[in-house]
Amino acid sequence: MEKRSNLTTEEKESFMREAIKEAKKAQAMAEVPIGAVIVLDGKIIGRGHNLREQTQDATMHAEMIAIREACEEIGSWRLERSQLFVTLEPCPMCSGAMMLSRVEEIYFGAYDPKGGAAGSLLSLATDQRFNHWSYVEAGILQTECSELLSTFFKELRQKKKLQAKKTSVQE
Image (tube, rainbow, N blue to C red; front, side):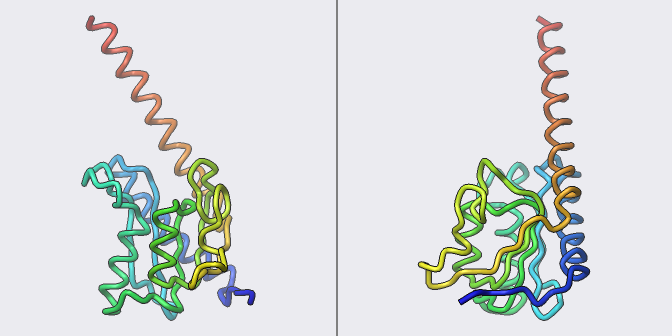
């Protein structure tokens, strides 16, 4: 059985822009700029952005936070009929959480060739051997999502280089 999206390009881009807003919140906190939103019946019911550095908790990915918020919002762990929009391809942990919470559709912006589990390294979300699997669509506002990440890491490398230079001068 093939799953399809019923969303228009405009709707997909609009919700991804909301995920990008979340990613920018993470970036302002010196977190990796990844953001996510969960949509049900055209309404955002969960939002999240990376908080791993702030919390020192490896599970505080944007998707995990958005899933928790969405479940709380509807009073159920089942997010059937929902769509999740995230700026970076989900990792295995987040893909697993999406499967377990029954997210129907997953949309992401940038591919993650080193850790992606929705098409790059693994395809957990679409593996029909599981009791639940999702429709996945990649590349929604891909350039904007990718640039957020590449700019963040470029600046981080520059800061580390500058810090190393300062340390060597002090010695």
